[in-house]
Length: 80
Image 1 (cartoon, rainbow, N blue to C red):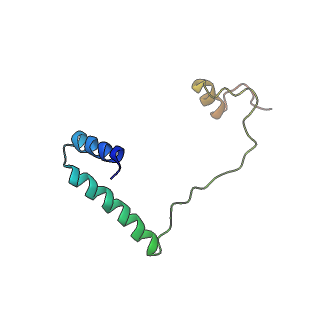
Image 2: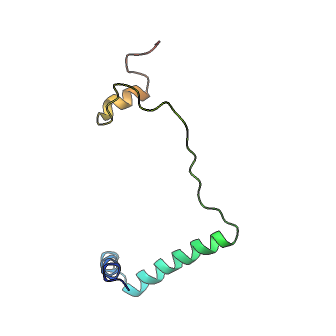
Image 3: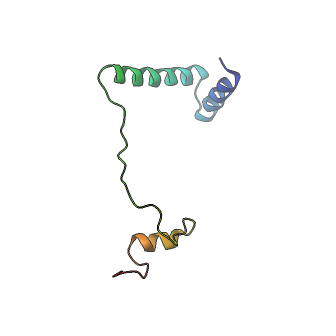
């Protein structure tokens, strides 16, 4: 087993108060369950996307208050 993976698994076991064996078993169960779901006709999650016109001029993504006002329609541009 890769040393870094083993170290992370040991850390997770300590943080969650469980054994290394339990962490490895849980990870293996999750992986096998995902594989089984896909081979039995399950489908992977599909993310729906929407098109747009890109970023509006003057929008500052670092200003959350201004973004909130813009999304709520309080940007002073009503009626334009």
